[in-house]
Image (cartoon, rainbow, N blue to C red; front, side, top):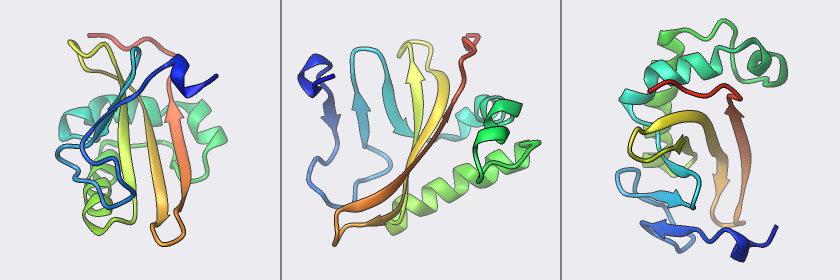
Length: 128
């Protein structure tokens, strides 16, 4: 797939520099990637708590508790502030803000333009 097949509009900074967690999001026709919010907690716990996620993801504990979710959201804010990690909620249906997953760039090294990509998503359709 070419990038031109699904154009992405970048809202926020597009240069390779530290973005602002309050204003950075990526949009395509089907999904929105935006910083995690406290309002994502219930769906984050639901998605990250799936056995299939625990079976295939080293960094996700099982069971994934509400407290684990709070820690993840707080760590995501610290990551944005420090510039070491950028965690995004994967959202479909902008009007209902349906959280379906998580994606992050971790261990960000701006000097070498590299980072580790991690993600988890649910194949379940979220309820409104």
